[in-house]
Image 1: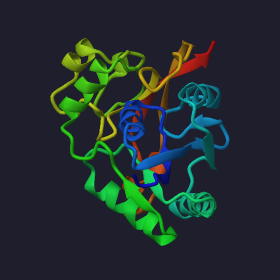
Image 2: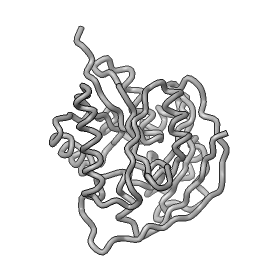
Image 3: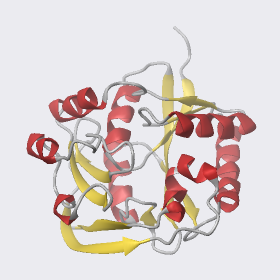
Length: 247
């Protein structure tokens, strides 16, 4: 029997991460040493998802895997983001990490970006749910008993009524035809609060729903689309956010 490879898991707090982690934990090839999450340094919230750090910490505690927070400034440049990420990944590599696991599904340019960045450090990327049809993934997610709430929607695709909803069959049926059921194109983001990877559900209450718009920079770096934590710098449209508050 081979010795499991030490890996970090890129944890967003949402459903794709939860399902990918579930599959990772069933894979004896890897030993997940930590959850790595990018957090807005100024607001202490998960980048793009807007989830408070307290709830992120509750997730990690319930999952039972140490949490490593990557703090990035508000609206970072790609250079700044990549510098911070490189420093953290280099430190983790020095502690024996060899693989970095993601919940990406089908965005080829995003995967290529991740693999290129990891190669510079000497790490390998792993994608447990890659190319599985999103309709199949969302049905598996629900069937496994996961529960997740929509915390951010892109106004280009969805209106305010979708934010704050728990994903179930009714939610899926209500999605417009041009919206991926897993939100893989950035249509919406989620917070997973219960399921087989948790020792106990995450307790929270729903706060206010707010609208935010991020101005598009004069010159867009094409690599911005390949970075979850820095996507907001490329937007000239708005998002509806549902604030979640720890009970």
